[in-house]
Length: 214
Length: 214
Image (cartoon, rainbow over all chains, first blue to last red; front, side, top):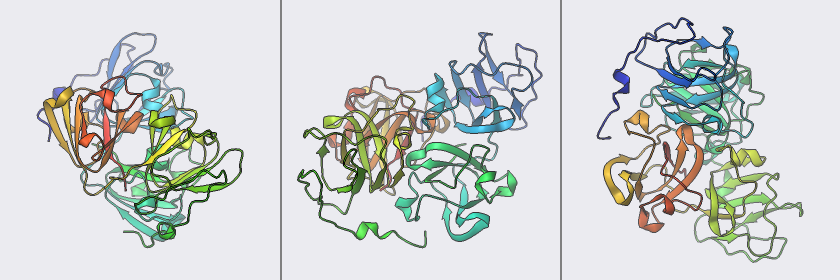
C-alpha cells in the first residue's frame, strides 16, 4: 500500500544494556522498544520476552521519549500489573503521548511485554453479554469504536473468547478509558470475567473494541 | 451481526429544550445528543444541525453525562473552534470519558455538530507526504492505529483528500492526542495544510487514522 517499507525490521542488534542487565533475545522477529532510560541518558534497544523493572532498576522516566517497533503492552506496575497501555509502532515523544487514552493515566510504565499474536488481517473475537460466556453474543473481525452503533445493547460485555489475533477493549467509545488487552495465546483465549482482563479492571464496562496492529 | 438493534433510532421526538431555544429538526435520520444541562437538571434531546452555545446559554457542565446516538463532533470553543472530540454512539458518564484521548483535554464542550457523511463500510482516504497533495501517497480504506506499522515513513502527514466517509486523525499511535476530523463533504474533501484540519492544529504530526463509525 505504501511506497516504502522501513528498514528497521531488518535490524537485529544484540541487546546491549548499559546497566549490565542481561537481555534475552526474542525468538520472534525484531520487536524493539527503545526507551531512553532516565538518569543514564542513553537509548537502549530492549530485547526481552518478559522484561520487568523489578530487578532493582529505576523504571523509565515517563518524560523521556519512547519509540516502538512492533507492538508492546506497557504496564503501570511491575509484574505486568496495573493499567495497560498498548504501544504500537511509532513515536511517543512524552508521557502524555502514551497515556492519552485515559484521563487518569499512570505516572510511569514499569513493566513491558510484547504482544506476540497480533494479526491485523486475521483477528476474530466473540463477545458475550454475560460472564462465563453466557447470554447473547457477537462475532467481531473488525474495529468498533462504538459497539452500540453496531447493534450491541448497553455499555457492558460479560466475557470474551479470542479465536485469533490480539484485541484491545476500552471502557468508553472511541477507544478511551482503561484498556484491556486480550490475546489468543493467553488464557487459551478465554476471559470469562473482568477479573481476568487485568488487575485494574473493576467493571464490565466496555464500549469500544479494536484489533492490535501487527 | 448482533441479535438486537436498539429502538432508539426509531424515536423522532420534537425537540423541547427547557430554555426555550428553538431547535431545528435535522433532515437526516435521528442524530441525538443527550446532554444533561448543568444547572437545569433535565436531559434534553438536541436536534440541531449546527448548534452552538453562543446564544447566551451556559455550555454543558463537563461533569454531567453525555449519551450519543449517531455521531457528533464536540468542540472546545463556540463556533466549532478549538480541540475536537469525536462522539460516537454510547455513554460518556463523565468528563474524562469523552476527553480521554489526550492528556491536555478541554474542560468543556461548547459547540457540537453531527458528522453527516460517516460511512464505516465505504470510507476512502488518500494521505500525502507533503502539503498541497505532493510527495508520496497512500490509499486508506481501513483503520490504522499505527501508520508506521503499515509502512509509512515518519510521524507526519502533509495533506489529505477524503474520497468518501469521514475520518479522524490523531497525533500519536493508538488514536491518542489531538483529533482532527476530516469529511468528504467539507472542503470538498481537500485538506492541504494542517491549518485546515482545525484551529487547534499546530504541526503535521499524525500517527494514527481511523474511520468514523456511522
